[in-house]
Image (cartoon, rainbow, N blue to C red; front, side, top):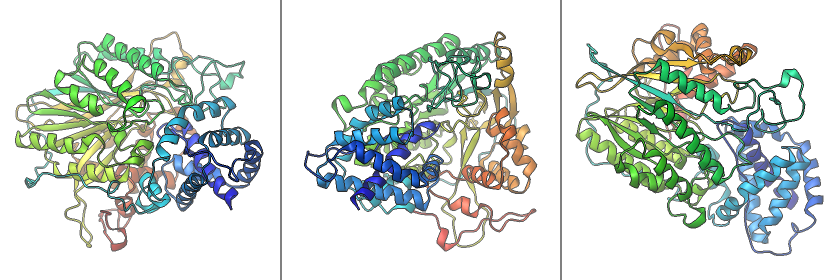
Length: 630
């Protein structure tokens, strides 16, 4: 029985290691420190590792691992999670030394060939200290831990520190003002959005793009021609060289000289998460920031923090974590870098939590959120998820002030609030805040997924048990990545924003630009040329950029497969990769469901998306068993 429990622990650990292969869900290990004691677990770890490896090979653990990577919560993933944490608590009671667990995990990682020996060693070394400290202090049950990480369908969280409600203002919500552009637009803003650069300074053209590690296209031995990486990048498990980003910025400076400001939504370092240091992260962040300033120095830049900027990846301790474990090493440098673009009024909140607000111009405020405090792979949050650093309370105060001043607000961030990477309780609170201030928040801009997509927010105040048409309240624009990881063309986006006097600063349209990697790599000596992929209005047949228009687009794509296939092409930034990867019905449903999910781990709108719909009329049904979770 004890062997079986250890097996389940390792299953969770291996799933975390394998997260390194995912662009959006990087990984860590579940470990625990405890006083040394003689237990059944203190025997030869090499023998136990081999024994466990044989058992794991007999199990279909890859299906579970793939499900976790894709953000899908199944019975198998929940079972593995609960069983694994039960093992952790059992090991604490038996007094197993943390270092023995480290050796065991490292041995099994190598025995199963989960990663190369170098990656196994690097992952364990990188994450062990954080996990030993976090999991030695936990007071939660396995069910509660899994409920926090994977959502309430995996376990009910009773502890009030993990099931909290942000304090809202007592001021009543004003009547809803439709997000309709002014009739005669006389002035606009041109806004550049770049996200997920993932620059790899170790990228080597002609190296192996199909290596055995999570990140490829690096210095390697001789490789067959079909596996060689391109000069500008590669569709396979590779990030991009700095020269590709440099070419993009040069192109923008030449062809978009009228940009008013830039939103930059994070993820600068590459995906070699097993081989990173604090010094290396800071050096790259400074290098990329300097490159942006070199090419776009005349333009204000508003950054947001990605989950890859820290090391270990996703590690963003709340402000109550002090000393060498604190995140001050990153935030203090970010403050210095960001202040070349931001006013001194942002210093206090940047130092506190790497978030801030600025007045872009009269009538328009921009709020930059640090979404790592909703990151379900930020293991420090297991100690207390209650509004880390007070960010959501601060957001409420900022939005309330803007409402009183009749200001419009644009919100930027990295991890979209509706993806399952975002903690359910945090996402639920954020959703309620946005709906309370739907008149004030007129646009949201995020990244992280590397795909071209969006998320719709819906009014929950009029939910009944009758069939109704849902009212869309807000929209999250998710811009595609600059990196090619995985299987996408590099891209950036330009938003056109209404700046007519007394206008609510609505987004009027956006145009996404891309470079075809296949064509570019055939002519490596030729400068990259970035061309328009599509305009939202023309390419998707939208009448306007109102949230309800985007909802209607999703409904049309349910039955209009030609329209969906066009969207699917944009989703991958016109990548040549998808020519050999058609999107079947399951793929289509997954994508469409993501578009109507603005609240993580809540399949409510997805479940009802395909119900009671006909070709000419679409209804939305709320039934008792799928009622919105509160």
